Amino acid sequence: MYNSDLIEALFAAVSDNLRGIDKIGIAFSGGIDSTLLAIICKNMNIDTTLLTVGFPESNDIEFSRIIARKINMHHKVLEIDKDQFSVFSKKIKNKMTCRNLSHIENCIAFSYVAQLASDNELNVILTANGFDELFCGYNKFRLIFNQGNDTINETIESRILNELELITEIKQVVGKYDVSIIQPFLSKGFISIAMKFPMYNKIVSDDDFLRKHIIRKIALSFELPPEVIIRRKKALQYGSLIHKNYKRID
Image (cartoon, rainbow, N blue to C red; front, side):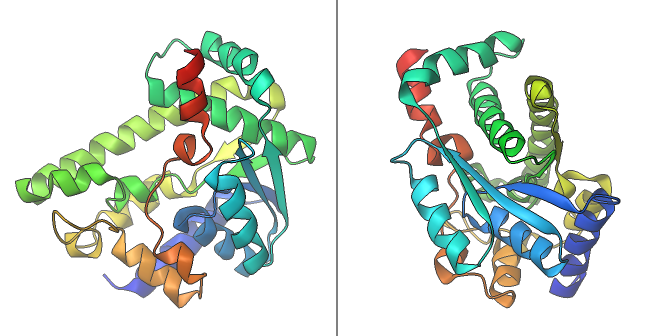
């Protein structure tokens, strides 16, 4: 498998999931995954708005604004009101049967993204979910590296199942905003292709703090800003400071 095969698969996954849709929002942190998705949509001439949520002092708010300007794409930001956060987050939690903290915080985050999309008359949101699972983006993969490829692949499969469960939960809690959330890189076709790439394209050692190497190479070929390409993984609930503020009230 070659970089060109993955590039073709990336574009095909977006195209296949957007048939008949020509206006979208992208859940955008300015990280490598969401920025690469944004550039793919820009290259496909899709009417795209980048959507960022977070507390005013959060890294995601500051970084996403810088990157959106650099890639010259339309960008909307929702700054979370600390005084209203407690009531908002409790409403989301009460809609859920799941009590996984990460899932709750992600559902809260995507509820804000859905609200921002709705406020801007967008009814389709794309996410880059799947890259971290398929290309060993999480730090967990570094910790299990020495256990071998079988263990890593089992963990990839487990992470994918967890992500699909999370997406189902997110779709349930954002229903009132009348938006559709699409994850092109969690489609069966894309997963099948991604799983064929050798492990060294994803992670190379137990002290590999970047990982997702083939994704970074593709991002470099699309001339993404260098600070995006070398930026380490920071999950949405952390970069937006939702985790930090939710812990205070939970």
